[in-house]
Amino acid sequence: MYCKRIAVRDFRNIERAEISFCEGVNILAGENAQGKTNLLEAIFYASVGRSFRSAFTSQMIRFGCECADISLDFRDRKRDQNIHVRIFQEKQRLVEKNGIRAERLSDIMGSFRAVLFCPEHLSIIKDGPSGRRGYMDMAISRMYPLYIHSLQKYNHILKQRNALLKNALADRRSFDDTIELWSMQLAHEAAVISQMRLEFIRRAEVYISKFFSEMTGNNEIPKVIYHGSSSQSEEEYADKTKTEERYMSLLMSSHEREIYAGATLWGIHKDDIDISLNGKSARIFASQGQQRSLALAMKLAEGEICREEFGDYPVFLFDDVLSELDSTRRDYLINRMEDKQVIITTCEPDALRSLMNGVKIKVESGRYEQVGSDILPRT
Ligand SMILES: Nc1ncnc2c1ncn2[C@@H]1O[C@H](COP(=O)(O)OP(=O)(O)O)[C@@H](O)[C@H]1O
Ligand SMILES: [Mg+2]
Image 1 (cartoon, helix red, strand yellow):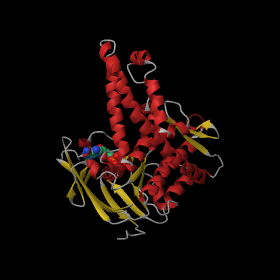
Image 2 (tube, protein in one colour; image 1 turned 180 degrees about the vertical axis):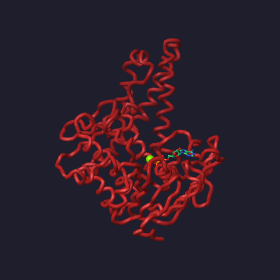
Image 3 (tube, helix red, strand yellow; image 1 turned 90 degrees about the vertical axis):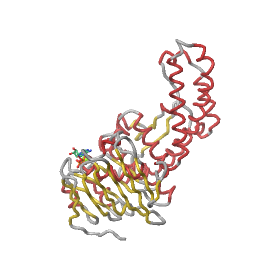
Image 4 (cartoon, protein in one colour; image 1 turned 135 degrees about the horizontal axis):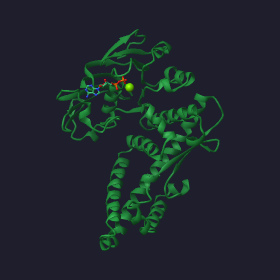
């Protein structure tokens, strides 16, 4: 996947910009608050139809403007394509792929594939399980629309079941009448999702180990294991029927506790990934440098699986991560990504100097100027 060019209008602090990228490494450098992340946000938006920063689409429209406009030219394995999105106030959007209007955002989602890595992603290792679930959801959704469908269904059922639990003291009758049905449906979706998460983590682990050892050069090997809330073994999670039965029995086993909590206590909304180094939890025992390498290795692994699945690499977007990394890992990102396209933002001018081959772009007040172009984009 190659992001050739992006044209942006009235998006955040970008009034108007047209930027061409090369197939290798592209560095956007500039002081704080100049529009580096804003540009990555626009690229990311063309990939998944939402921001990685704010839930409110209208915040992305430049202050005082009616609408924002993003047009992204890219090439996948087969051909040149274009994604065009126009964002209006009041949540409306216009989406076009190759000049043809798409009814729903999901019709274009996944055409242009990108993997994002930003400082917040360090929380995948350091913090609670929700970041790790987000990591799996993002990666698996990109590959399987069925997964998104299951996840949406699951969340809907979970909401209903939680409402029933909260209301149980006031209306025990309807609780007794319907809890089994909601539990069955929830257990069914939970089994589908668990199996896909397990499969993804098994595939990712191989790459995570590889990247981690390339980056750190030491012989500690990370272990990455899917940890579902029903505490089954990997073999059991691989068997959908067994998982469904197990969840069903958990969901039917402690109604009083659940009523007391007013929430569903078992299910994939409680899942986690166990990440360890030499048998010790990485969250608790790994050094900061190791945690950073792990988070980065997990993102690179996401890219590898995407390549296995679609035949080409996604575009890697690295927002402001260089300052968090030591020189070995920095060099890895800048000079060793080989056949991958990378777009990196940084406020360190040094990064521009250490780039051997690639496009360097200076960012100032929402304007982007290519400096010292070593490689011009191939067309
Ligand atoms: N909707 C908007 N309209 C105009 N400017 C915006 C909007 N949203 C954010 N900004 C501005 O964008 C700037 C931040 O840009 P950003 O890309 O995050 O900076 P950085 O270069 O540090 O990554 C801030 O000055 C902020 O005020
Ligand atoms: Mg930024």
